[in-house]
Length: 126
Image 1 (cartoon, helix red, strand yellow):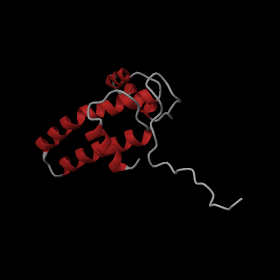
Image 2 (image 1 turned 90 degrees about the vertical axis):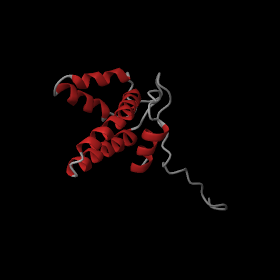
Image 3 (image 1 turned 180 degrees about the horizontal axis):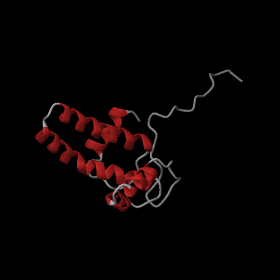
Image 4 (image 1 turned 90 degrees about the horizontal axis):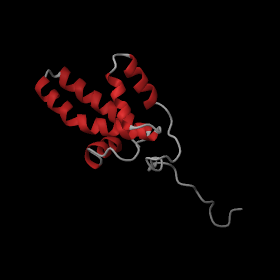
């Protein structure tokens, strides 16, 4: 999954979908997009528009965060740990960088749409 696919999936396809799982690329590309939006509005000193953009991105950010925690086998409610100053944020980041676990109560692992397909040998090759 690339940057554009992740942002489209989080903002359009799964805006407020807290069910299912999100892989590492989907989550971290979307986090990068949110940071870039904040930086651009701050550099341009458009604070009111930046605040509106951050509010618009809050729900999809919470949703993809919950789906990312689901992918590691944890409840999305564990995002509340991030409210604990400093240590909570560090723990949340640690959980978010963990690899996906196999199938769990939240469903199968996230599909990798851009994974290379198994290539078959050409006809007649042994």
